[in-house]
Image (cartoon, rainbow, N blue to C red; front, side, top):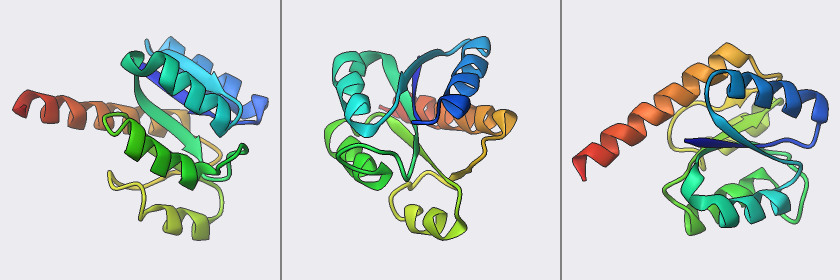
Amino acid sequence: MGILVIENDLAIRHPLAEYLRECGYQVFEAVDTDEAVAIVIGQRKLITIVICDVQSPGSMDGFGFARWLRDNAGDIQLALAASPDRIARQASDICEDGPLMKKPYDHQLLLDRIKQMMASRDRANSVE
């Protein structure tokens, strides 16, 4: 199972990616949404979850990426992250699976969220 982390700040992305790797996940990293689209297209079968900042740089922001992901890879789950509360509330319309992650990331809370998303995915797959 793979996790794609979209974060342009290396000081945030690298420690988060390393933590997730230590937890046993295969992690892909993207600096912007354009790179993320290319990774999703190229590694689709390996990616299960995407963690994306709503203010990600690229030709689309995190909200645009969420819509692209829903339209092109709807089986991949998305966790949007935001710093300002106002943006987090706006993003809740796109992210249907529960609360958004707050930045800066609490690694343990993020890991708990990933486990919840995986359990939800496993339950959905067992019904099919």
